[in-house]
Amino acid sequence: MWKALRSFDVVMTKLQRSGRQVVDQPPLPAFEWPSRDTVIKGFRFILGREPGNESAIDEHARIPSFAAFRKALLGSEEFRGNYKVMFPETYGHPSLTMGRETLAFIHLQKTGGTSLRTMLERQFPADRRCPIRGDKLYLLSVAELGQYDFFSGHFDRCSLRFIPRNHIKTIALFREPRARLISFYRFLRSHPVRDEFANDRLMRLANELSAEEFFETAHTRAHVGVYNHYLIALGGSYAWFEYTPTALREQDFSEAMEEAKRQIRALTAIGITERFSQSVEVIWHTLKFGTPPSIAAVDVTDKLSEVDTRFQRVDPVAMTPRLAEALSELTKYDDELYRFAVAEFDRRYSAFEGRRA
Image (cartoon, rainbow, N blue to C red; front, side, top):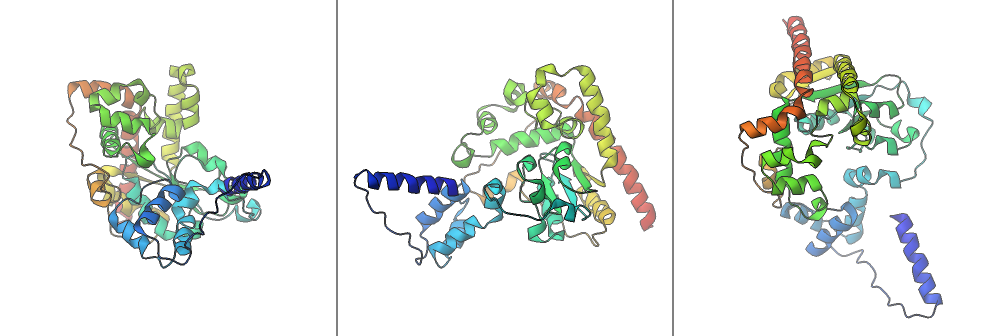
């Protein structure tokens, strides 16, 4: 952003020197309350999205000045997460934090992970939570990553190698693979295909196609969030699958299966979506976080339209023979990994129950 502003200043200077007339722009209304239109435009320009609902607009319109409104958006965790690489700050040497306790939640998509992440992040100060939610940790410097103690995002196990720590505690949640994929489809379908979602091809396809058609489409089937997601995230990497899909052999997938199982066994704590409350109990006990908090579902597809009026309610998806056939190859490896994860959770939960008795 700052480079863009400097470029704009350079252009304006050149225009003035060339003798062309430059129309003076009115100063920003720094000491006026932001109007409804200003709030909407501010969200679009700074955060790249719509405000979401009238409540968000009203809340920001009550900020006492335009300058304070702008500062609130630029200083928000969302902005810092989206544009972190644009802040060339100086940090201490990463060796100074190598021994700090660190937790990484590998957020496998559509497993109830947002609810768990919301609960986990309360255990860490705001400035110790990495704001990067997606698979972009590699874009930050080692020194910058060293400042954080809690990482949570849709990243794969390879991303953890970028975090400068001697030891990283890890967590993952697992959900029955077919149910996960149907939830993924419904989540995409609930989104509008405009505003910040306008260029998302998967969302467009989900809005245009039935579940059967969506999962039969080549673009969908090649997506890392769809094709055996657990295998790729834990046994390989997103880049491994995205950049070499045609070169991968059956042997590569077999080796990835063994690695994924090793990673599941190595998880510090594990959870099963269908047994969420039990999972929270075991996770909190394992991490010595004390009494588990009350559970509040977050980012639930059927509730999105109540939070943001742009979203639409989506009908349930029935499992038809055609849909089952479309999903069979997409869950070929994940079915086995899910059963493996459930068995590992059962073993740990039995030990937890035995200690509690």
